[in-house]
Length: 622
Image (cartoon, helix red, strand yellow):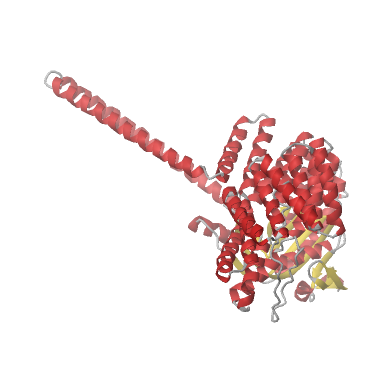
C-alpha cells in the first residue's frame, strides 16, 4: 500500500553523546523505534547535550516519533533552527519530515507544499539522493489524492535517480511504492508482483526488516486481488507480526482492512468485522485520519453486504466526515450548516410574529361581539391546560424513573469495564488521569498452537470455547481480588495490586495461576461440552506500571511499562502447564511457594534474565 514504504532519512550526519550512549542512527536505518524516540526526547528535554548537536537531535526526534503530531512539532522546530543556522541538509530534512507527518495527519495539500520546498532546495544543491527520497514521498501523496499521472511520474523520477546513483536501498523503496501503486490504484496485481519481487530481493539481502515486512504485506494484497486468499492471508499475517514488533501502526491498520476483505469474500463475517474494528481502533489510537475513514468505509461495506442498511449508512456517514477532513472541507460545511440554521430560524420568527399580529387584530375586531364565547372558551382552555399539566407531570415522573433506571444500568456497565475509583473519576470529570503504581503483579496467559488447532473450528465453536475459558478465568480473578485488564485474541492479561489486594498481590496471582491451569486441565475430561481443549502457558512479573484510560469512544482501561513487557516475555518463555515467574515476583513469593530456578535465559529486547518455575505451595509440601 503506497504511503508507508517511503524512506525518510535525508540528513547523513549522526551525533555521539559521551554521557548517554543512547543511539546510533545510520543512513540506512528504516524502522522508526519508539524506544529510541522516548530516549531522544528525554535527552532533548534535559538539555544535556552540546548545542552543535541540537539540529541532528531534532531531526532524529522527528524521524523516530511514531506520533505524527510530535513528528510535526519537532520538524517545525528543526526547520526554524536550521534556517537560522543556514544548514542546507537539515533544512531539507525538516521539509521531508514535516511533509511525512502532515501526510499521516491527512493534510495532503500542506504535505505537498513541504515536499516541493525540499525538492527545490535539493535541486539547487544537486543533492541527488535526497531529491530521490523526496520524489518517492511526492508520489505517495499524489497516490493518496488519486492523481495517477503525477504519482507514476514522481515514482519513476525517484527510480531513475537512485538507479543512476547505485543506491540499492532507495531504489528498492521506490520500486516497492510503484508496485503498490499498480496494485491498489490501478488494480494490476500481476504487474505489481514484478516490482515487489525486485524490491523484496534487495530488502532481504540487506536484512531490512521494515522493508521485508511491507514487501510481504504488499505481496499479500496482490494475491488477495488475484483471489488467492490462502497465500494472501499467510503473507499479510507475517507482515503484521513483523510490523507490530517494529511499532509501525499505519501499515498494520491498512493490512487489517484487507484481512477483513479476505474473510468477507469467504463469508466469514464475524472474523471480517473483527479485523475491520481492529483497524478502526488502531487508527483512532494513533490519530491516522486516512485510515479511520477507510475503516469506517470497510464497516459500511460489510454491513451493506449483510443487508443491514441502517448500520451501513451510519458508518458511511462517518467515512464521509473523515474523508472530507482530509481535504479540509468539513469546517466549511459546518459553517454553511450553521448559517443555514440561523437564517431558517430568523424566517420562522418573522412568520410567527406576523401570525400573532393577525390573531391580535382579529380578536380586537370581534371582541365586543364574542366576549361571552371567549369567556367560555377560556374556561375550556383552562380545563384543557390543567389536564395537560397533569399529564405532563405524570410523563415527567415516569421519564425520571426510566432515566434513573438507565443511569443505574449505565453505572453497572461502567463498573464492569473500569475499576470503581476510575469509573467515579470519569463520571465526575469526564476524563481519567493516568496514575503510576510502584508495585503491581502482571499475568499473561496464552494457548499453545491456538491458531493451528482452531483452524478447523467454526467461528461459533471458536468463540464459545474462548468465552468458556475467559469466563472461568474472570471468576478466578474475582475470587482472588485481582483485575482483568484485557484479552488479545487467545491471550489473557490481568493484574494484582492496582486497586484491590495491594499487600499480597504476587502470592494471590500465583494461586490464581494454579487455578487457571486446573480449569484448562478439567476441559480435557469434559464430555459433550463442545469446548476445544488447549494447553496453556503462564508468565508473571512484578514491578511498576502506569495505568489509565485510552480513547474517548469504546474506551478501555490499560496499563503500560516495562513490567508489562517482561510479563509477556515470561509467558513466551514458559512451557505448557507451567507458571514462569521473573526474579522480582520470585522474591515476593519464595517464602510461600516451592520454586525451581531455571537459570538466566535470553529475553527479547531485555538480554539475560533470571526465571523460575513455581511448583507447589510450601504448605502442601509440609
